[in-house]
Length: 180
Image 1 (cartoon, rainbow, N blue to C red):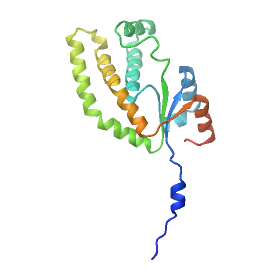
Image 2: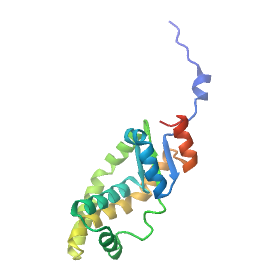
Image 3: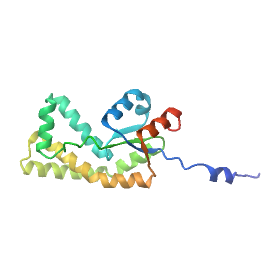
Image 4: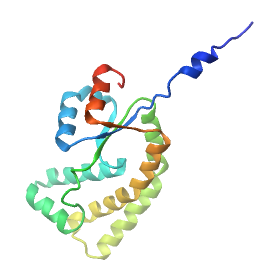
């Protein structure tokens, strides 16, 4: 029995990357999430410099919602305690991870899970020791993990050949079905 392969076909297959770094405004991101809800639900889509920074932002919003803090008071409190900068949410990229690269992201997250847990515990204890406001101690620890993760996540994106796009270019890819 002879097994043949089509080397030409294998060589001409494009190296498709399923990771996109998209330059967006907060308004564009919200609009995209609303208009392409199905796309966002089946893929990993967030607006942050790293997955841990996204977790930190999600925890901020969750804490604000659950404790019914006024937006103004909570943001002012975060700014006064150096957990947020006034333009922190303005200049962030939208990261989109689809297909097989979502498995790579899961492996990335699992590979850093124990070091992140250790860092959260250490940073949380330090925040308590320094008499940091109690209602912000967990957030301070999560911010330290997020800050630590940014350079590591940037290497992950580079290694996996993330493609940089404008919002308009990315929207065209999604609408044409080039990225699903």
